[in-house]
Image 1 (cartoon, helix red, strand yellow):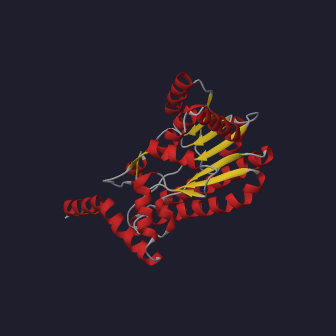
Image 2: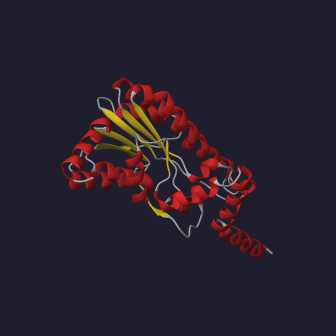
Image 3: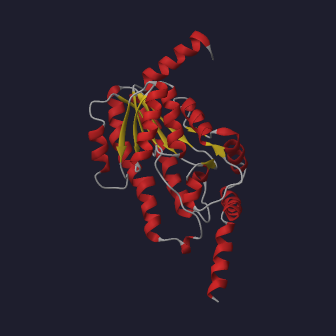
Length: 282
């Protein structure tokens, strides 16, 4: 849609979800791409992540290019005082949208995982997300409009061997989004679960995975924001749709075994590395 009709539609979108947006995990990957797209749409931004220099650089770029305002909040979202700090940083702002993009993953056999890392992932992906929603949702409900975007995943719809805990955290996110959409809709608040497949971002490196095919984070950002208010779950990009529909045709046990094969390919280098290290010790 272009011309006057397109401008009117975008203005209504900004009125519903602006003037301020909170984006967690904004320093890289999908969170950063969503922040860029929101600025392009004319919304002001509270940018949240752990690395202040990256946030400050992004904030300056968005202000100069799109004429929006930004606020920086360098924060580790693991349980503690993070929600209090976030609340303090957004006092007085008319917050119309929150995008919960902070999170990380892991891969490899469950028996080989470090418990501390797995529990930290549960803290960020589930506990911190719940605290964020519990703070933001009442604000949106009181204003009578707004939106909440939670980052689900292709792996949220079945167990995933060699990524067992990460997939379980995303199943939690997906279920939470589905429930909150029904609960908050009478208050005028839209809730969306975005469930992409593999994405080119910092995620794969941190999770020690190798992806032969992946979406661009900008594709995920545009598709996610365009789906807000229109559906419960969006699968951004052709790759997510193809993979999602292919898996949906299988019974749940079949999806688990299919994901086992997918993850085996994406983590094969881990097995080769372990073999090399074993030979080196021999």
